[in-house]
Image 1: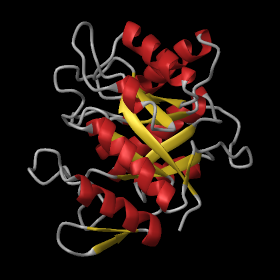
Image 2: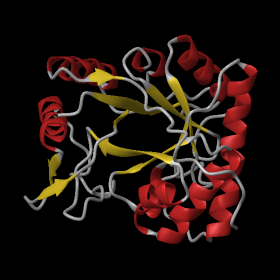
Image 3: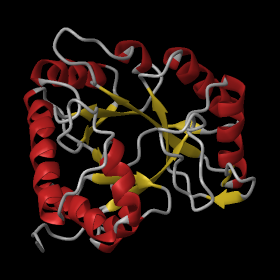
Length: 266
């Protein structure tokens, strides 16, 4: 059983007058916020407001870069080169870091969004591009990636601190990847089932795949989705579960011994 774990949520995904999620309420229950950078959702005003809200509550702030797919909410796979991924990730990290600096705080981590997240889980070249962009901007940033993925491996190989991420409300395939969102069984809608999945992850480091087999997972951070119905209730109940298990909730910290000096290999 882990003694502590991070609880993160994707947020800042409103745009203009369109509102998505209950960010202010969810921020009361999480330790890390992954904030959209404008490519799949968010805009400068939303980014500013969400960063300010996170800092006010002592929540760690991370950039949530995406493919350039505002209409598809960043969930459509695109044919992109590693150089293109490097540039778009570096651009988005810089944008969010600017708001952090202006508000007297600092960016702590990077977590890719949607299709980019899933693509970097299995594509070593794209994973390296995201890891390089993160390191070259600031080698003290923590790179979030799907537990056991190519992105986690790439981050470690480049000397970054990494956080293996698991999902409370998503189902898994036997290879440890997430079930594609286009499938009806991709999301866990039942609160009890989601909490049971998290409890087993914490107690055993395992999750049941849809084919019935077990997947072994390293758990550093747990993701919930702020745009899901009942997100606030789920976040509150998940915190209560972790408290019952004796697991502290806190953001991951950078390990200065693993970072190497910045300098692009691209």
